Image (cartoon, rainbow, N blue to C red; front, side):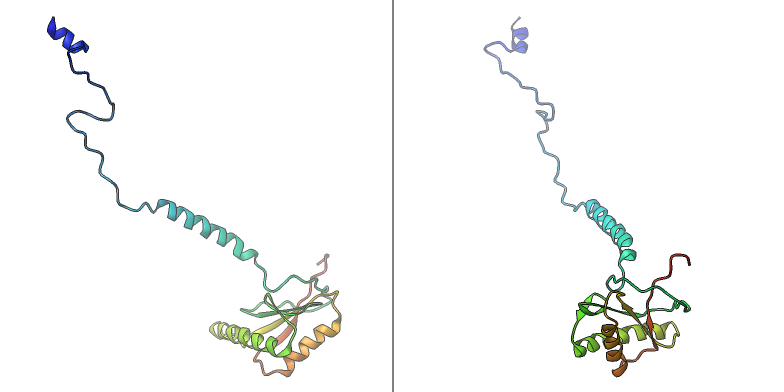
Length: 169
C-alpha cells in the first residue's frame, strides 16, 4: 500500500508537475535561428515595383496647361523631345519654373543635349522642342519664350506648338 500512496502524492512523497513542452529527461530549448528572413523584404520590394510600374505612365511631361484647339496640321511622333510650357507664371522646362532668360536657356540646352543623344541613338535628325502655351495666357509671353529659344545657339531640329484636337476628330 505504501507504493500506491507514493504515486498519488501523499505527504511523504515528492510531487511532480506536468509541463507539456518540457520533459524531465530533456530540458534543452530549441536552437536559435540566426538566418535573416528575406520574404517580407521581397514582398515589400515587389509591391513597390508594381506601384512604380502603374504610376510611371501616368506622369505627364511638363505641367498641365489648357491647350488651344488644332485647326489643321499633321501629328508628329518621334523619339525623345523636350517640352516647354508657358503660362502666366513663366516658362516651364519639364516641371521647373523659369522667369529669367539665361537660366531658362541653360536648362533648355542641357535637356536638348540629352534628347539629342537619344535621337542619334534612334537615327533621327535631332530633338524637337515642343512648346505648350496655355490658351488663357497672353500670346506675347509665348512669343517671348519662342524668341528666347530662336535667338540662342541651342541645337534642335524644330519647334512644334502643342495643341488639343477638337472633340469631333
